[in-house]
Image (tube, helix red, strand yellow):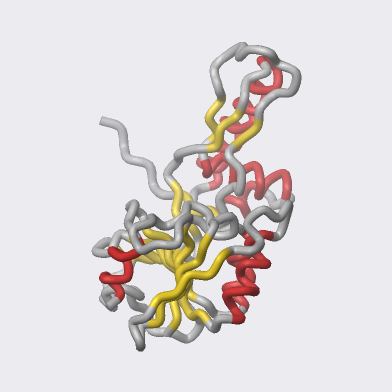
Length: 131
Length: 103
């Protein structure tokens, strides 16, 4: 059995679901799925212009892992562009920065500044920080 | 403490809306008086900035906590600046279930 993937820390998920090609009457190929860590990789590297090492640190993964994710997303984008397939954003092993989780209430939440670190619903202090 | 819940219908059996800015109604629940009221979201069909306008409206109602399926980038900024807590339930729950949970 393969090793399970660690969660990659991302700042924010995309606010739309993907792209589709213009002027294509019927679907030509399979859809391309870009998962959230790949979206974050291309965001940090090519939009915010960080180096791969800096981006890897932000996502809490090693530099070689980041390079692998980045290469994979570049290939996927190229495939979608050339073959005219639509791109969907979905899935991935991700955790959001500065958000917390309570396993009992099954909620994700933020904490106000200077507040006690506890779940807003059940007030338990057993919460998981996404880092 | 006043809590805002984003929802698509104005009754307590409705579920939490998947998007904060584009929902039809907000349920305001007061944890001290245990009363709830519904206000319509005037910004839901805006081309842009729907979440920000809705957030401004709710800030006027003095909320301390907001619950929705997802918060947009700008809304997160506004709420973080105003020190408002955000909650995203991971399972599909109705308003009354969540309100019973808070009580």
